Every structure is written in C-alpha cells, then in structure tokens.
Image (cartoon, rainbow, N blue to C red; front, side):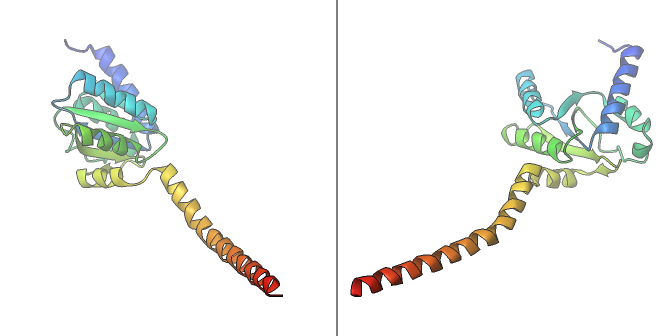
Length: 175
C-alpha cells in the first residue's frame, strides 16, 4: 500500500528532526530478519536509548537535504532495505546496538552512518565505532587508572606497617 504525500511529508519532517538532534546515526541492511527479530532489535535499542526507524532511502535523502550540515553528506551507500538507528545521547550507541544484534543475527549488516556534525561514515568506520567501549566503560577505565596508584601506595604502606608490627611482636617474644 502506498504512503500518501502528507504521510511522507510528516515522515520526512520527523526524520529531519531525528537527524538534527542525533549525535550518531547508523544504517544497516536487514533483509532476511523476521518480524520477531525486528521487535527484539527495537526492544534492545529502546533499552540503550536508541530510536529505530525503517524508512525508504529516498525519504532519508530528502530529510538529509533539509538540514544544512547534512547537504554535503555522501548518501551513495544508502541502497537496499535499511534500518536506521538514531541516538541523541551517545555517538556510538547506534553502531553498538546494531553490531551486538548482528552477532546473533548475521542477516543484519552494518552499511553506513552519519555523525552529529553531518559527516558520512563508511562501513569500516561504523564497524570500528561499534567496537569502541561505551561511555560507562570508559568512565570505569578512567577511574581504575586514577585509583590504581593510590591502591598500590596503600598496599605498600600497609605492608610496611604489617612488617614493622611483626618485627616488634617477634622481638617481644624473644625478650
């Protein structure tokens, strides 16, 4: 069933808003996935704060053309049936959500993406983004790097005190 012009205009406006507010957007082919699989993908994306849209590539190109920062973006990789993942909170979350889902469902293939500044990302860049740690993981790594010297210092300080106490107790036993 064909979509009316009004619905297309509404959809293009919604897409343009998503692209304008998104810090990261990723497109992936989904040919061969069942409806149940797509529902699982949407649920996983919702948990990560990612919006999933399945729209025609032509409408995506029109939406990109409405925003000044995306006018120069390369859309040549946007071919075939694509599912788009948008995140306004995290730059790498869309790639990570789709890549994690693709591990269990090889029919899903990462294709292209766009960053918040309007640059287009090729397949290799999107896959590299998907392998980056999340913001929470990065925060944990920074905290552990900062805390490691303090932990080691406390271990050395406690060891010296323990050793001194043992020497005193042995000396007291000898007397």
